[in-house]
Amino acid sequence: MPLGEVRFLVSQTDPSLLGPCQAEIAFAGRSNAGKSSLLNALLRKNLARVSGTPGRTRTISVFLVGREQWMVDLPGYGYASGPAASRAGWGPMIEGYMTGRESLRMVFVLIDAEIGPTKLDLQMLRWLQSEGVPWRVVAAKADQISASRVQARKSELAQAVGVRAEDLAWVSVLKGYGVRELRRDAEALLGL
Image 1 (cartoon, rainbow, N blue to C red):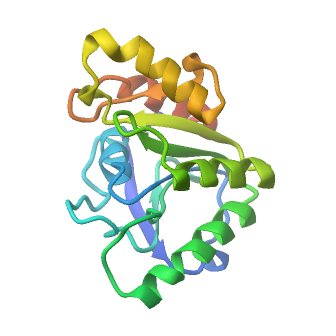
Image 2 (tube, rainbow, N blue to C red):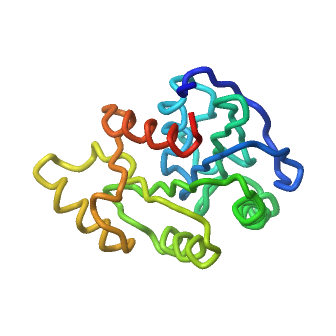
């Protein structure tokens, strides 16, 4: 069952209240990195809330993409609008989710292809690695890189995050490239 027959399942702030599933993948990244837009492109539906204001995703948003497979949109880290008390709870919520889900197959960490990895992005990658959580970097908003600079920029980003250039997912929701390949990878991880 390929991605396509999807629906919103639940929004939760307490990861321990999420029920079991067969397999799931999650999308993490700094606020305004394009997680919700990418998720909508992968799902081929506008289910994830997209906003121009950083930090609008404030809960763990779960989308059912198969009988028992999930795609998960996580709150962004870094700058976000909203009450300080609310933002303070996002870190423990995200950490609790990532370390408490046996069915979690991959965390896709979105990094702005033009800006490159921030200090918070690198901190997230180190934390995922230290916790043994599988991760892959998605260079989002890749349309902002001129065609003549793509190969060099891929190499720079890969070196900055400690992976091979071919292991980066190079994606532009706006232009549509890389989305089909990432969808295929997601389907394989979820067993669809």
